[in-house]
Length: 566
Image (cartoon, rainbow, N blue to C red; front, side, top):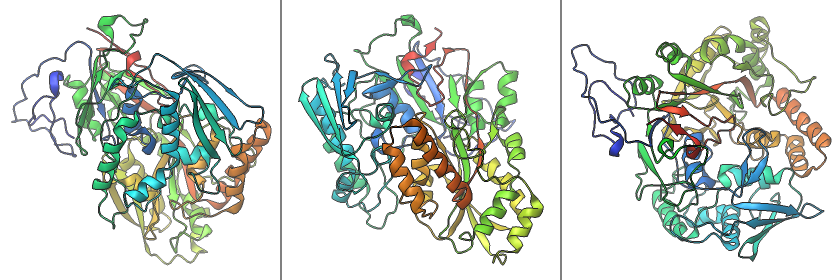
């Protein structure tokens, strides 16, 4: 979506946000008259520019930031995150208890909560949500979908119902306000894991319409990417979806519910009552939206727009680095299957220069896959310092004969771990060219299911750019997301890593668990399924109307805590 000086489509609702339906930035032409100034937004309306469209309204089937940014406003989890410490605190559940063997969890629910459609929240509905998450493959089979995405439930519980590694046993309602979760084996840090927005509770009344649309959208049996529906589901959060959302919507308006509890710390006139989330894929267009007062804030600040933001006295709010960006190696590729080639690539990349040129100040060169706030790198981990001579030596001793190698990277997007993917790819390609690697750039628009494509098997793909962002402070979550089997993204099989992940998932001794996670980090550094580049800083920019934005390193940002000036 483009915010253009040349032309405008109709304003979005009462916010008056001018939009042009295009992905690329159209430069202004001096002879082109400026568009008329649109009506100012109504009090309480937040106009937010986001880098990509939400992929679904169901939080349990998405993992991208822009989808979860919106689902966080509409749905609630059983437990929430304490902003200062990251520890779990009450949300839909008032309290919880677990058995001495860590196999049974009992949650006491609030008795005063209703979904947006008026359905009361009950323990039976919570149990139905867990069952729905646990049986996702069955729903996909019913829809004729053979792809098996690795989503939050499988990462936390080890798999889905019926799979050998799944630690989930059952869920049941003890009575209307008491919910019980039963496990086959303990899961370390389970309550903290349930703060993940993918575990938000939705109303079962809306599931049939969602599943019917899932089948319709995925009717092509040859398709390799799952198209998830944008069917509104009822939640218990402070905002609601519009009645209808197009699957390729370039803007979504959330409306504050009449029953939403007002934040006592924010005067009524400063609270957000409506959110216009507008997809603006170009960071330069997002900047223009802020400069021309068509946006109140935008996410995905890149170094290229930092200077004009500062010069125009806009706020730039930074998040602590909780992301890792990496070059993925596809070990099913005949060239990249060579460890010498992967080591050559690692030594050839000048990560410090990459950070200096393409990332915001405060970003750091990565020494392993986990940001320091989550886990420090083991002292004896294998490292690959920038060394062109060593890279050349390794490449020359490999079987590489100058073949063209596909390097995939996303375009028309900004992620917390990759605010400017085109610039990152350009810098890496320069470095790899110095040792004689011949790359074939494969730029893929994010909205063309880039994430699903690189997480799937493809023997033509040699390298790709991607990253991971922590939604909890548990290091196992990121390692399991990256390296848990099966692993078509990297084509990497390491039985020791798979077994250690299983052991660590149930390990209750924190020191033993830390040793197990360090072992996984060392194995990844030796085998090089990917090369971690940096821990990037991500930032949000805002104009004068935004008095306070609830920034969060794990992206737990709720708009009912945001303050707007009148």
